[in-house]
Length: 500
Image (cartoon, rainbow, N blue to C red; front, side, top):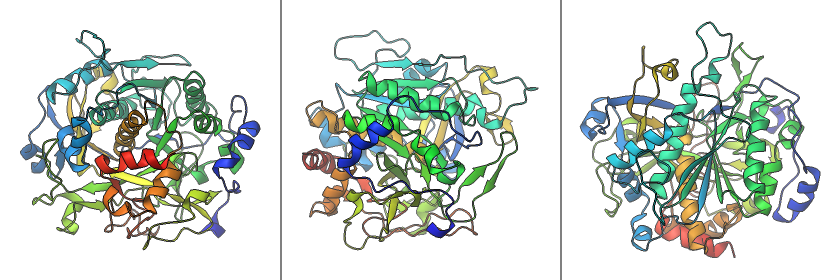
C-alpha cells in the first residue's frame, strides 16, 4: 500500500543513528504546520457495569455479554505470580503516564480500586498514610493544570476535547499499570490542551515527555493516544515531534505507544469541528509506528476471569465476545488492534529477522511489536468517579454515566499494562532503565526461547471496516499482535539478558 501514501519517508533507523537524529532534532519541537490532527485516547469501548465502591461480579459482567478481568485474573493470564513471589513488583522504578487534562478524582479512584482488589496502597492516594518503601502516586503539569470540568453546553468546541473521556483514560492507565507493577511509582503527566488542537495539543504532550526525560523523572513512558500517520501534513510534521523519543533512547527510558483501535482503518481529520473522513486504505498510527517506540497491539483474552494471581493460565469455558470464534484459544487477535505497515518509517534493523512463519515485513516498519489484552468484551474493571459537571458528555448508552465500575477495552488497556511489565524488567536490570526494548524483544523472538517466552497468537484479524482490508494473525510476528503476548515470568528475565 506504499503507493497510496501521501507522506514522505523517514530513513531506515538503526541504533547507531540516534546521535545524528538527536542533533537534527535538538531543542523544543516547532509547532505543527497542520492544525487538523485527530489525536485521541485509544479507549475503544466502555460499559458501566455497576455503581458504588464494590466491584461487579463476573455474573453481572456476563449478563451484558462481557468478561470482566480483575487484576488477579490478568496476573494469572500473563504469569506474573513467580515474579511477585520473588519480590519483583517494580519497586524503585517510575512509570510516567501521559494524558491530556488528567482527572480531579484520581487519588480517590485509585484508593477505591486498590481497596476493592486488596492491592498495594500508594503514597499519594486518598486516605493513605505514607510509609518507607511505599510506592508513590504523583502528578506533573508542566504547562499548567486547569480543572477537568466539562465545557459549557453552549461552547463551540470539538467533542474530542471532552475532558470526561480523558478522565476515563487516566483512570484506566493509572489503575492498570499499578495492578501489574504494584510497587512501581506512578507519575501522571498531564497537559492542559486538547489533542485536536494540532498546533498545541500534540507538541505540548511531546514537550512534557521531553521534560520528564531531561529531568530523569521516569524509567518508562506509557502513551495511550494515537493519530493516523496520514493525519499529519507531512513526514516532517512527525519528525518535528520526535525529539522526546530520541532523548528517551539516549537516556535509558522505554517509550510505549498504543497501536490504535481501528484495526487497519483510521481517519484523517478535517478542520477542527467538521469531523473526519475515512482513509480508504490500510494505515497505522503514530507514535506506535515510530521505530523508537514499542507499539502495543491487542487481543481478546479468553482465560479464566475468576483466576487468582498464582493460578495457572487456563481456557475459560464461557466464550464471550471474540472468544467464541475458536474455543481452543486462550487469546485471539482483536479485530480493533491497530497494525500494518508504516508509510513514513523504513523498516528498522531490529525487524530484519523474524520468527519462522511470520508475516513478512517489507521495506517499511511493521506495527505493532507486541500485544496484550485489549478487547472491551474481555476487558479490565476500572473505577471512575467525577463530579456531575465532569461527567457531562460521557454517556453509557443514551444516559449519562455515573460513578462506579467500568469494563474498558482498547489498546489503551494493553499499553499501560505493558508499561508495568517493563517496570518489573527494569527492576530485574538492577533498577536501571532498559531504554528502547525493541531490539531485545526481537532478539528473544529469534531465539529458541520464543516458544516459551511468548504466547504466539495465531487466530484473529484486525478488520473493522469492510472497505479497508485487515491482516490475519499468523505464527510469529503479524500486523495484529506483533510477536504475541508475554509469559512475564519467562520473558522479562530473558529480555533483560538480551539487552546486554
